Every structure is written in structure tokens, then in C-alpha cells.
Length: 231
Image 1 (cartoon, rainbow, N blue to C red):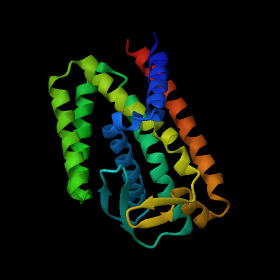
Image 2: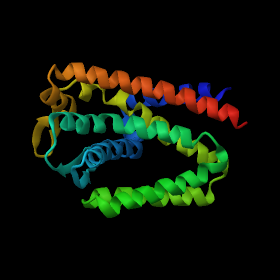
Image 3: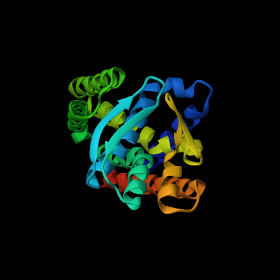
Image 4: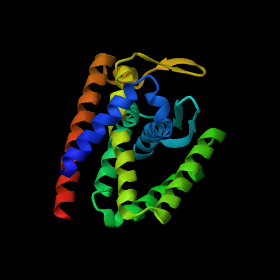
């Protein structure tokens, strides 16, 4: 079985599990990871655009919030909103490329753990978020220490596929005008893009979904070629 076939089948299995009645509960830690990368996508996009990323909050119900401030242009606001929607897909694609060689899988797990610890030190500010990210970093360090190369690579692939496919589970949100937070309803990311650039929230939701799908396809193709080249 080729690497591309394994990735496609694994992705299809994850997508199916996510849609089952208790699927999201079974994938709860991975769902939290997807939320984390979504919010970090907002925050890092704000930083790259010259704004200040102040803090990130992660909650047990799977929601999160990235807080930033500055004086962004309309285009900047749209890009920061899009950064959250695209964050998991881009992170997942990056992990796919990191996992293409079993020789470096354990080193990649250590690198991810260090990045998570950096995020806690700089931005994660609520108790649950700190506990989850620190726990995940510890789990990755233990996996890097004790797992064989093949299992470490498999763990990277699992995380990568989950992030790459999180856009699929978020389709409803992409095509929604509002998001429900603990403090009430707020405009969804798609609606924020529409407010900044015009057109409708469902147009931007559809465009982000198409970009996400294309990115995943290209990422799987690139990871498959790299894997074949290292055999």
C-alpha cells in the first residue's frame, strides 16, 4: 500500500469517526489540538501583520479565543480572521511533511513539544488551556523518548490528518454568520471577513473551504512524493 493510499484511507476513517454520534468525544484531545491551532492561527496572523497577540484561551468544551489588539486595516482584519480558519490545515500539512521520514519522527515530536511550551510561556493564559498544552507537550516528549520510529511517525501522521481534516468538521462554522461563545454570540470568522472586504459570509466560507481542501490535497501529494523518495 502506497503512502498516499494510507493517508487517504486514514483521512477517510477520521472524517467518518468525526461524524459518528460519539466520534468527537473519542477524538476529544485531537479536537482540542485543532482548536488550539485555530486560535494560534489568529494570533500568529496578527503578529505577522504588525499587531499585538496578547493571549489565547482554550476551554474544555472545545472552544477557544485569541485576543489581540492594534490598528489593523480592513485587509488585515480579514487576513487575521482567515488565519484561524486556515491555521489547522496549514499546521497539518506541515506535520505531514515533517512525518515523511521515520528517521526524523522523534526529533519532530521533540520540536513540537518545545513549540507548545513556548506557546504556554508567551500566550496561553487560562488554567485549562495551560494544563492541556503542557500535558500534550509532555506526552509528545515521552513519545519521542519511548516510541519506535515507526510509531512516532504514525503519531505525527495521526495529528497531521486530524488537523488537515478539521476544516471538514468546521464546515458548518465556515458557513455560519455567528459563533456561540460563553459570553454570547459573536460574528463568525467568515462574517468578519465579509464585514472587512464585502460580499457574503457564505462566499468567504466557501472560498476558505476550497483553499483548505486544495492545501490538503497538495500536502498529501507532496508528502507521498517525499516518502517515496526516501525509501
